[in-house]
Amino acid sequence: MIILCPIPLLLYADSIQNGRHRRMYLIAGGIVLANFAISSVLYSTGIKDYIEMLPLGQIILTAVFVMVFVHLFQYLH
Image (cartoon, rainbow, N blue to C red):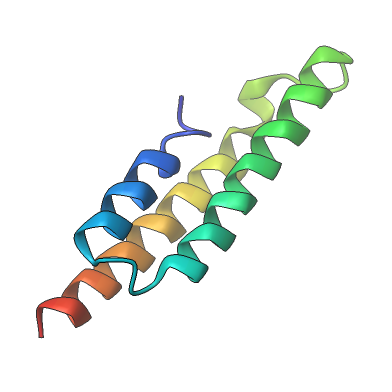
């Protein structure tokens, strides 16, 4: 859940800002999906569990929140 949580946030922020930062949001969404894919492969092969990948997911989620809030603040001004 935490790994994929940034996707709806990015989509919502993009729709509010009328696509102003769409390219950056697409790149961030690609990073989120790559993290999910890598985590899923590592889990399915038994190398790592999802809980071991949680810190990276939390870092990505925090970075997305900061990026969206900065852009929303800039958009409001």
